[in-house]
Length: 127
Image 1 (cartoon, one colour):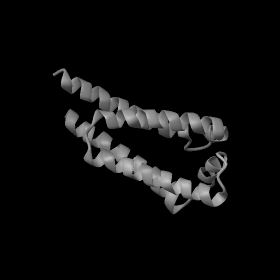
Image 2: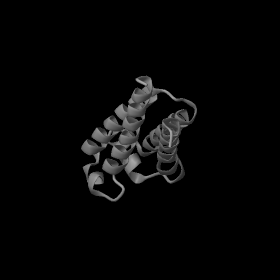
Image 3: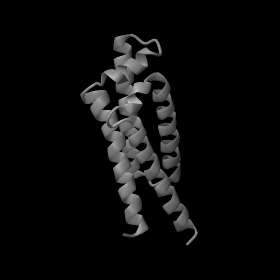
Image 4: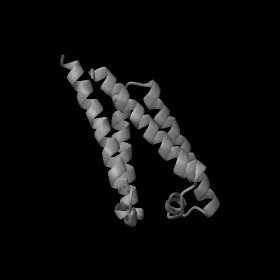
C-alpha cells in the first residue's frame, strides 16, 4: 500500500472516530457522564446538556476536517486535543479509565494514528 493510501485511510479513520464521538454519545444518545463532566464546571443540567451538544457539534466538524484537509497541523491539533481531554477526564471522572472501551484505549489509538500520519508525512518530505 502506498503512503498516500495509508494517509487517506488514517484520515478517514480519524474522521469516523471524531464524528462518531461527537454524534453518538453527545447528540443521539446523550451520555450521562458527558453531562456530569459539564456539571462539575457548575452548569445546570440543561446547560450541561447543551454544552455537551455543542462539544459534539465541534467534534463532528473537526472530524469532517479530516475528510477534506490533508494538513499536518490538523493532526497536531488532534493530538493536543486528545491529550487535553484525557487529562481532563482523568481528573474529573477517573473511574472511566478502568471501564470497558475507556478513554485510554480510544485516545491512545487516535493519537497513534496521528503520529503515524506525521511520520509518513515527514518521510515523504525527505524523499
